[in-house]
Image 1: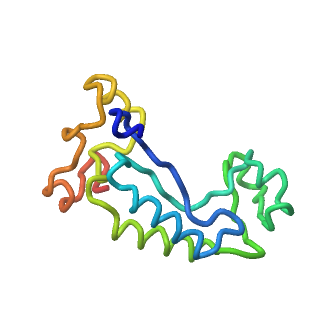
Image 2 (image 1 turned 90 degrees about the vertical axis):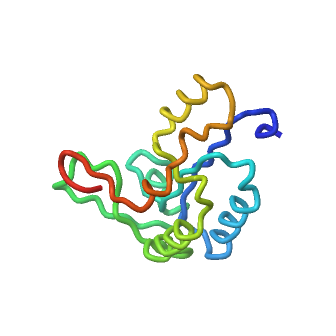
Length: 149
């Protein structure tokens, strides 16, 4: 309904939350793909155990064990293992498969949501072809002053 009203829909998500099964990860992928006509942009990645997250504060509740390296006092996330669910490699595999098979309309010229919202504010709707990558942009590596990205 929001898409039909001209509202931009962005989905943020991750694969590999503690306890998530392969079936649940597949359900998430299918939901996004089933609703692709109403999803304008998305940001998926693998789960990261943040230093100040509820999971880090109660790891036993989520079946998580993690390692705090004392030499990394400024680290904002931790290496972790799970009692059950997708491990990090399995979650990465699900993510990579999703990336290979996602809808090309989600390949935007910017992945910074604040920039996307500036376009929305300027043009006032959810039809923003100027944000879509051109075919040549998808094939060519991006060059920066420090090398290729």
